Structure formats: structure tokens, C-alpha cells
Length: 357
Image (cartoon, rainbow, N blue to C red):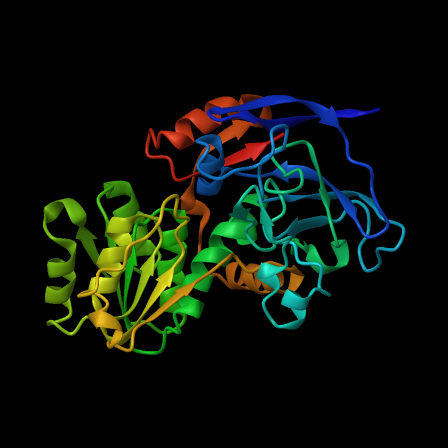
């Protein structure tokens, strides 16, 4: 049986490059030859044992590549075609999909932990930090890459861009809104860009890393708040003349950022949560106005499917957002263990890495 190289979860603290069989293609599947992929913060949660996956699983959920082989019942695509697939791969016919919530098309609960919706790659099926990946329900999930776009231009679409933009969308950002984004990692930066595209006129970005704050101004952040320069809540309330923000987007996944996001909301504001939390959250009664503040707390799992990917690539092609500055480092798949070490420890100003087999 033909083999391929793949980044495999071995145990807590160990993701290693090894060989696995190239997947067999079912009737509705497509085999994608990976040309570029990346490492996500969620993969680091897996590496650290903070999110449980099966030992032996290939990690990764952000595929850019070329169709190597199509299933017998797949139509509308051709072998050799450049495509992406979303990190979330809905079937298109589940109850969740038909209720308009395709991102939650998942298997339910396993190992005492609720499996995260329609996130299958690198979660419940083999992912794309490999030479090949099998894409399920190909006709729902493959989206052709326009000829004028490079791999790196669309690399953020499968997850980071889709998730970040969804934070602004789920938060209901409107024209003239003031939005605060807590943590300007790649998802937070995309959330800021999405908020500006939706009409926010003031976007306050919270971080302390100078390189991130610099990139943030190019992606729509109008005011930078360094959390090491003083109390974040006080700084944001001063910037808004005590009014608070219409939407606060939490993009880190910690108690401190969640609580701060809640405390800077105006009455009736929205906390849009994007973070992946590794422990229980506490909602302080005063920050929540004892439940009487008309606040809304919404969560988001990265929207997937081919139509979502098409729309995001349209935004990139239009020139209205340029996410190439997020790709700060390049590695070959053979060096993915070194890439994980760099990314997990956030050294050398890393934001996102491009990995090519």
C-alpha cells in the first residue's frame, strides 16, 4: 500500500512526522494532494493534551491543494483542480445543516467531552498536515481557487479568516459600532478586519506584542490597547467616554479576557466568544449586571462548506483585506516538528506558518 508522510499525534506533548497509508477514496470523497497548510492554535491545544483526540490521528485542518482523485459519485470538479476545503466539513444533509447551523454537523459526545461540531479534520478523522488528505462529502466542501490567487493568499480562508470574520458576524456588528477585540493573534486580527468590513468605525485591539499591534493597524484596528500599560477595562472605558463597546470579541480563551470583554460592554452589548477554553468559565455577577443588563453572549465555531469558502476568497480577490502579513514563517513538512516547537512557544514573532510537503 502506498504511503505518505503525516504529522501524527502520539501522546500529550508529542506530534511527530511519520508514515501512513494514503487514504482510499470513497464514492463521495476526494483525495487532495496538499500543497500548503498551516498550524492552528487548536493544534497546540491538542499537543498539550488540553483537547482530546485519538492517538495515531493525523493533525491539521487547513488544507490548500490539488485534487488527486475523485470519488465515483463526485461531479462538478476535476482531477488536477486547485481547491481549498474549510476546516469544518458539513455533510449538507444532517439535522444541524438543515437547521441552518452546518458548523455543528458533528457526532455528539465522546470520551466525556462534547466533540466540536463539524470539525472533523484532525479531530475525528485524519487531517491535512500530511502529503494527502481525504475530504468527505467533497461536493459540499471543495471550493475552486481562482487562478489569480496564490496558496498563501487563501491559506487563512479554511479556518482563521472564517472564524475571525464569524466573530464579527455573530456579534451583529453594525455601521458605526465600536468593537473591542481581545487578543490580536491571527483569529483576533481577522475578527478586527471583519468588524471593519461590517461597518465598525472604531475597533479597539488589545494585546502587548508590538508586531501584532503593528499588523493590527493594517487590518482595521483604530486604537491599540497594551494590557501591560494599565487596567484594560479602564483604558477601553476611557476611549469610549464611559459608554462601553457595542461588541466585544474574545479571541484567546481565558477567564481574564472573557471577563474583561464582559466588563467593557455597553448595556445591551454583545460578547462574541471565539476562544477555545480549557477550563470552566466563571461569570462575575457584577460584570453580568446580575443577569439584568440585556447582554448577549454568543459563541462561534468556524463556518465551513464550499459557499463560505467561495465568499471568503472573493473578499481576498477584491483586495479589501490582505492576510499575507499573517504568514511569518515557512517550513517544509519534513520540518513540521520544528514548526510546532516554534509556534507552540511563540518565538521569533511567529503568527502563522506556511507548511509545504
